[in-house]
Length: 329
Image (cartoon, rainbow, N blue to C red; front, top):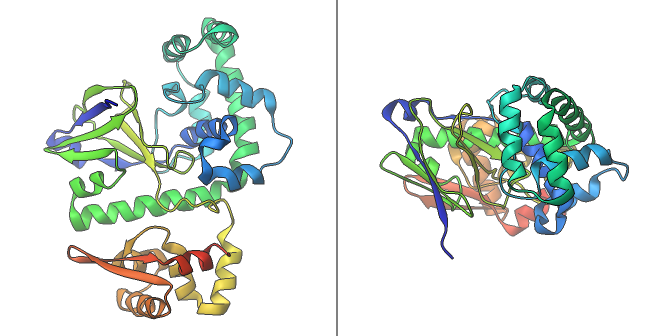
């Protein structure tokens, strides 16, 4: 089957302006989509089963109406990812979405809907102030029910992913880091290409740079993009380290493993949610590089970590035994 491609063309000024962001809005929309089709996202089954039975059904229904179950979602829900974006920031921004932007995005959803859903979106589009208030209220209710209880765990995964990729830019360059975002992403001659299922476009980043946004809820489902102004060109990609137990609080696991292995080695086992270099391990565990190397050697000898050379670096990853120990199985 033929695949579509979105190409982001980066000028020299864009390369220096590539940055990372966090998008609570993107995570929330995909959390709602998981509720609609949990069978399609096995990595989220544990989180799904952990939810309270009583959920704000009307709020979730409204978000599902305006965002759909897959593909494009209104840009105003995710249009300004930044490295320090908080849920409160996202909600405040949503409450100030301009009428015209709301109309434009809801018009796109009209073209993607039929029947009763089509008529409800049409009614929302005809009264932007009322629609904005309803959507913001639904967003707040849905956030508190679905993601507020696990946001600290999500934020830790997102920041760890960003930290690793920033260090890889310094060690191996922007092109190699971009190519490692996901199997659907490639880099060549200053162009980042993303294979898509339905959409294709050539985007001139125009000196404004490119925003790269890891996602926990979108993990395992490829990448999505923002391309239309006033949004900055953006690629959402699956965050590393998302397992079926990502939603659990690591505090208890760290204490239990520390009693068995010592705190430094326990921290390294928990941080190795993806292959990491010795330098990356040391930074995440707040250890000297020589100390991290020693502990990794001990963990390797115990069969908990596997180490393989990749170019000039050595990448460390948990073995199946290490995975079982880290995940409490």
